[in-house]
Length: 502
Figure 1 (spheres, rainbow, N blue to C red):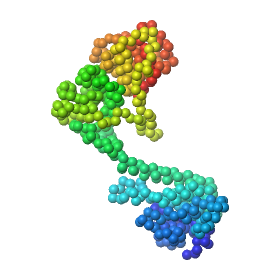
Figure 2: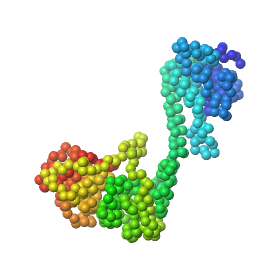
Figure 3: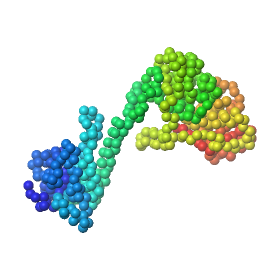
Figure 4: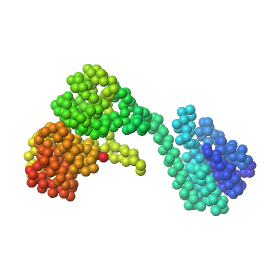
């Protein structure tokens, strides 16, 4: 083989994917561009009948660690990275007596192909030298061409042919941009593998929302359903959604409170002096809808309440604790799922929803509602202590009801809920129909998750024993609403917060 000193330009080739390698060799031979390579690539080039300078002979450093270190040598990177217009750089390069590398062709170890193959050590498919070579070449794109995929070999050939054995700057810049994209994706793939294998795992669920939909729960390493589940059948996708939704409601309250969830919405919520009383009142809020629902409590479940629960049909019971006697009673229903919520995180910092365009990410609505967010704007400002408690209770509840939402309250008990309607008037009608179905109470409090744009809903509320309303402000018709309320001697409280939930 001739001395490398007689060859003006070199290509360093290190490829896992050796398809079309003969194409490259033909190209470089035609334009008298020397080839430097190592390992299996060098052997393949020689087997094809082409000359190749082995890196180890040029660097005088043999491959070590079973091939983990073969191209990580300063002389290689001085050759690739030196600025061809910088006098000091050129002097440093001349002193190392090494071939001038103007082309770097690398195809990386196919990590993504092997990461799920348990019989293969995926760690060995994490390429070190390849990305480093490509990064160096792409960084010095003003002089060096970086090729990161066999799909670009034809483009390389066209550029070399048009430029008499070299490439033009626009092509090198284009290939540099692609190179960094390839490396970024490659590194992200490795990162995801570490996260999935070391920090996260999946629990396979029986099915999703419907039996024909597959589903799984992606969880952290330290999470195990057995830490929370005391008894019952296999927990489902819908169960998990309902539990999560119910915990959002409970996080608003410190006094004994029960929420009953059905299809990811509350059908009954109540606070009382004891958890047993709160459950009875929550159940009575809408007994028909509660059938087959998920019951969540924020206080320990004891035997007295267990005896009541066992008389009804529920899918799941969630409580921060159970007495032994309560568990014994509830165990009579073998399919009834019992969850201990004591170790489940109370709040999420962010909400992530998968959509066709990507992932929507927002801060969770963890702001604690209090009296400072409320202002009485009606002329009638005489709210009783009970009304004020119901106003705050109702607004905390409507915060977690699907929009458009209306909640009717009496004595810290929901007595009518209108959820997920396309307009506020229909939500109001629905809440009133639930109220009429189960109650005949007067002087109700109404909470709305957004402003009333018109007075039609307020007229309907007035006809059905509602005298006090809490809504966010912000409508261009706020003054008209206030005037109507004042003419009819109703009480209106504005919240400085809007609490939509979609």
